[in-house]
Image 1 (cartoon, helix red, strand yellow):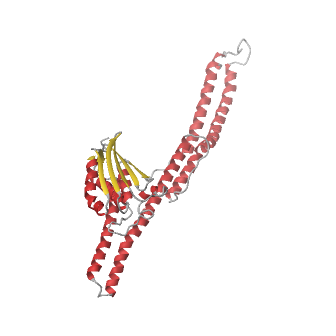
Image 2 (cartoon, rainbow, N blue to C red):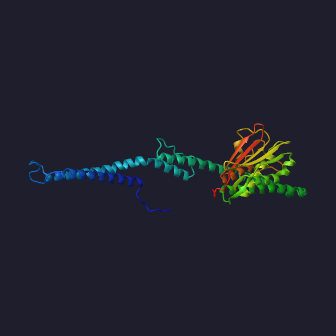
Image 3 (spheres, rainbow, N blue to C red):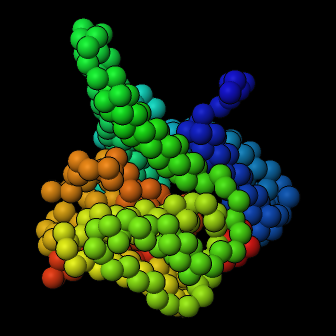
Length: 363
């Protein structure tokens, strides 16, 4: 934005200091005149017949007062320039850090020393903002790199299958079409997941009251055939639980949670329990499943995009794209809720989602 040039803050503070000092000096001299010189008789004989009189005092006083005012003005300009520079020095560091951040260097920090004041509060807030911004940018870069890699894989497989078919015309065409269909479905699923993740991150969706218990029942009903196929017992408990947000996104969140609990379970005799309840003004959803024991250091990374974890990559028809819990986290965050993951000591995972019982706009 183009602006007309103006005086610097340092110069304006300097002029303010000098002007204030000159005015204070002038007032002091006026007080001396009012309360001292006016009581001196304006007679040739002076006070009690002794000189000097008012005329002589005025001639002596005003030149000295003018010199004193000039000295105060010069002292105010010089001292004000020096003091303003000392006071505004932290802003120079903040400005340099801002320009460095504008140039793409987000690792720079001000780390201002000294006691707490307004400038240090501003510097600390700026450092905190830079830290969050750097973390967000790094996360987006990793996401873009991982997404490019994940999207490149099905395309490369499709190209390889087509090259094989081109070099070997006798190859079974039905098998080729089936394999291309599987690869294409995976690419479509990944693209839809990326679009949904982007939509939830932007928060551009309508918010309406939603019964989370009905959403849980719908997700469980949809995934019941998968649970029966794997010998998993799937239970939905709890009563009506009010939440607020997008029914489509909340259903996708619930479906991802339940599907993740089914797929990453015991080979035989596993269980999945989905529980909903209203608690302290929030809608609570808890999905608990059996499964292998998860290392404590692995659990916090499960919500990262494309993070499947140790021994969590599958090669069957329900192989994921590594966005299941990342989508859940994004949807929960877009709805103003919280997501907690805790590894069960006996194996498996407990995922707890807390959502506001009303849409944020209505609240």
